[in-house]
Image (tube, rainbow, N blue to C red; front, top):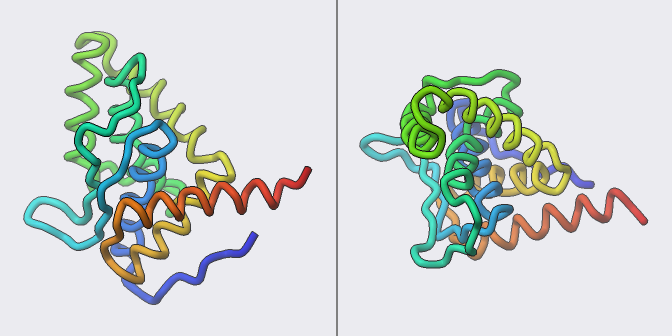
Length: 168
């Protein structure tokens, strides 16, 4: 398995690239198509992962899927840096809390969040998924914005590389 060469950029930009790549990889793993991923900052964000409208594979619990995707950025960032930085994921956390309350009620929301955080960490720990996060993050650092098609290609490539490394 080859390790991608990371361009020289600030640690904050690198962290943002891993954060957005985490959202994209978990979205694709759960059947949600990605439109575009960017690490160009906007008014209220450091980066964005945008999803295609109307192209959602039916899933029994879409609220759970959306929570997993929202948690994936912080989880990927934490795996890369070694620690969670929740302050940088405040918009994601607000979305997670809103969806968790909708899914489980106010009293059980925090418990659901902990369970789904463990689940998203497990998803990202799969070799192919983590390889895809790394490939997407490096490409974001090179180009700043990448298309959904490129993200899908890198996701597939990461999973193929992990499969090849695992052997028969």
